[in-house]
Length: 291
Image (cartoon, rainbow, N blue to C red; front, side, top):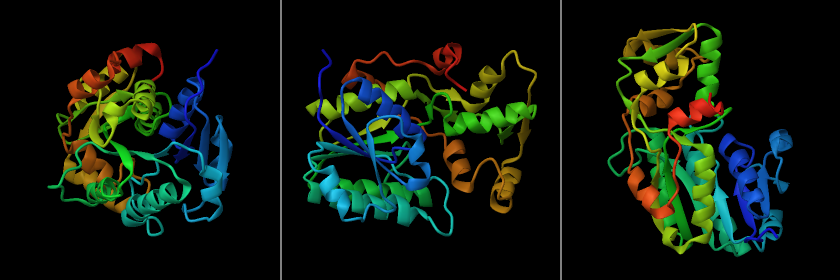
């Protein structure tokens, strides 16, 4: 018989991470209410969904009563005039906290970014740090995950690489010797399940990073191995110029900042807390679930 776990709410349920985590948690016996925007609600294949534009609707309180935790997965990695970092990453986090308090939700689980720190100097990380601080000071129980690249079929990074692969050329900005620490989305789902049920995750900020640190250069060469794809390096200045002036650029300005920032995390702490045998990106590649 399947064990029934606490009921959960999830913002950003129609995003890549939300869709994958939601399906996994439902299989584990969690009931989930996905908070989505109307135009993408059809992507939800788990639980039930409730429509919200900005988490301020009064009916959300009654719909989410009885939920133990809110998985707050809404985030913005590229700014637009109508949706800047302050509005999405900070203001919506404040509203998520207010919603938890009104609905009696005890815990909030938040995805921040690997590399966020008090010494950060650019917009995306500043907004994520502000959001973290709002949660920490909220009096709610919390787990904050500072996430590296979460990989799996259809993830944002793989979509960029697949598109470039079809065009026959993958572009590397600069030397490509900056490092990344990708983590498999199925492993992330398992981590989330534990963070909901296990008190050791209470009031913690944890790096959500994979078991292997790899240069971006090596990572791409492993992806294109055996394929007729050319790897082209362009100067960083050219990459940034394109990101600034070309609305169709593969990477936005802060996408590049994160990529070339050489951010790595403490995977061993995560492994010790969870006991999970995390998949390396090589194993994910071999399984056919990335890119």
